[in-house]
Length: 534
Image (cartoon, rainbow, N blue to C red; front, top):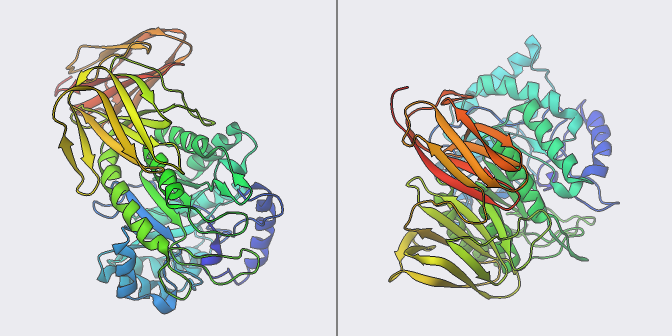
């Protein structure tokens, strides 16, 4: 994502920002010789709020576009067009100034169509919020923004250098105190910017430690003019791992517009990116870009969803269709618990190979398989056509007859199939997907670690036992939102542990929980019911 969508910084921090950007050039996801993407401000290069947003501010699954309409097109009609494409929240506009006047025009237009905006403001550029003058400058704007029905939170930049994380964390802390519940936006570098996976994970963890975000967001563009860039799946897997370990939702910015070294993407390639985000448990998809940035001889921007002159490109209707599909499936998956993602037919870098079990004994075709469980304990299978250029019939061979349902992506309702079967055939377009719900409970799967919980239901402590594990084992207890209440690690073979019912947020309340055991071969999950009492 490029900050060319917004106006460049000005004033006394401009020189310092240029120095920071010079250091950033070598760690962006662009090939050597391609400049790094600009950051909004040095102070505000990155941040996100730790407080959860008030109910209704962010839906469980969000869709949005980088580069909203520029100032001349910031009207309720244009933001209604944006909303009608399936978008949920608004980012700053193309080539706009970061002033209260322009921000309030955008928030007025957004509120008129029932939307909210992440906004950038120049006043955040200069003051040190830890000084009386800086605190007063922030106080002068925060009250006005928080009271506006179109305000979602502050946008603090894109792809920050790691050297700014502590500064950003201090600013984020000040803003959280003044705007409780309003999520602060930032986006991070993706896996392609790092030589090793360990460096990427360290970068994500450093950011999370310094800023205490309420979500993680990163970008990765896999389709170059010279061919396909690997590591897209590894980027998702590692981002998911870090976010899940901290109980955070995560978003991914995906490639749409042709620019610089990146080629134009097909409908299948666009759907393929979005589908894999869902398969790994992502809670949001951002399209780069919605509005086309102004002409630039270096980046040579082609059409986004909306051309720079305001006309729709073919991508508008393509994304509107994809957003309907991922909105239906993503909304349901966001209320469910991600367990694992496997790959059949071929295994990309960072992916886990499919392992047969009693429920799913085999897969014909190239597919990504996202395993989830819904709040009622029903196993879910999110199946993605891993071919972004050709249709496939994916055949799922069931180890036992099961009654299953398939989501109708047009209505978000589940269609009951006529009866139990041993083969499910899914005809999927390039990059297409299907969400299946099995009308059966969770069971231990052969070829995976065996997991048991005693007692279950439980009022107090629970003994978690794992056996037949191969290689190091990780065990977790999570609530239905995906928050980790307890975790442990064991050696090959397994082990037994006692969970007292306590977690980082205190004593776990009564309700539905899930235990998850993962070894070198895959994942097993069991439902746990906690009742009242100790």
